[in-house]
Amino acid sequence: MFVNFFLELRQAKVPVSLREYLTLMEAMRANVASYSVDEFYYLSRSCLVKDERNLDKFDRVFGHCFKGLETPPDETAEIPEEWLRKLAERTLTEEEKAQIEALGGWDKLMETLRQRLAEQQSRHQGGSKWIGTAGTSPFGAWGYNPEGVRIGQDQNRNFRAVKVWDKREFRNLDDQVEIGTRNIKVALRRLRRFAREGAADELDLDDTIRSTARNAGWLDLKMVPERHNAVKVLLFLDIGGSMDPHVRTCEEMFSAARSEFKHLEHFYFHNCPYERLWRDASRRHVDHTPTTQVLHTYDSGYKAIFVGDASMSPYEIMQPGGSVEHFNEEAGEVWLRRILDTYPKAAWLNPVPERYWRGTGSIEMIRRLLGGRMFPMTLEGLDLATRSLSK
Image (cartoon, rainbow, N blue to C red; front, side, top):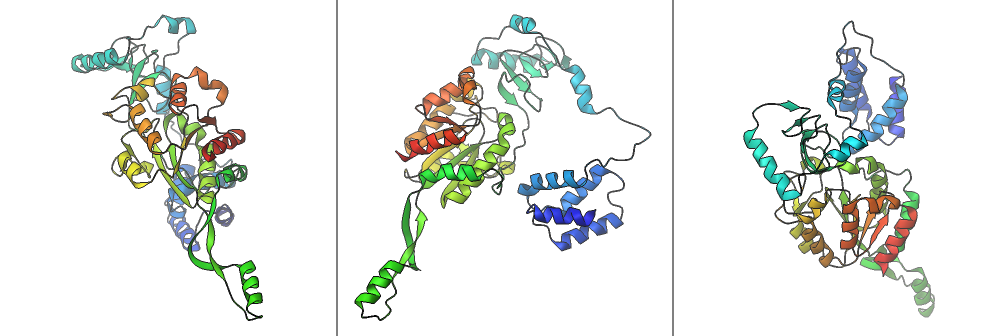
């Protein structure tokens, strides 16, 4: 069983070595994982996976090799914390939702939140005023309000929050995904523009034949620089939050772009670009790149491609302080316009089906800022985007 697990990991291109496999076997003999499937999963993952980008591949192989394996039942069982939380969630009918009124805009919402923070002394649940859970208050978690601030909830439920205060963990996109990328590569090739760059180290066969013939048969080798795709691309990738369901599609797009363009630089953002971008999602709070530095480092010859669902609170685009991650001194619209002014050849690829765009105000706002250059992340959309960037 374990040998087969090791071989399937190698077949899935997870770079696991024999030494790492033997380490796992030593840990098993030492009873590190006991008889728990979960403990064995984390033990084997820590022994065999060296790079976070391979976690998805490891999970797929683990699920295939140990499908149906269960931990022996214990005499005692605990109710999962998630089940208890679900009991507190507030579920309202459409008629009840229609009766709940918003406070009336960003300024009123922030002013009221400051008052609640100053006045509230204890935990609340099920109410309509205080910061709490499972109610209709604009502030809290696991409830409902048409315009509120989500606090302490780990995922979307109603997609209504205009600001989110929570610790959010993002992960980088896997740039080694190969399945499903072939058609994307074909679509991206419309952007290619070849030029010969660098040292003359490639044989020019036609010129060598002509020169040898003119030289009375004496071999006269002619060399030329290697031919490369000269197109330069800046890829801006939205990750986290509402983009989580689109990770697979974005990874395929990222992998295809990495293989097609020699001059490719990528940066991550969340929802809307602001004053800083990052390359490593896990270190985005301590290791980020000022957006102004990106604008001054990469010249206007780069083509800018944004990948994101553009689904957010309109305040994140229009309002200083609207970001869900930090207090931004300038609105997202200001930074997006600066990027577009620097890189006029730009397009936005949206994984949300086009038929849903008009139902989300922020998508229409971003689309207008891009001058209509938003395209669905389909093969047809990619073809239209590359045509737009090639003009």
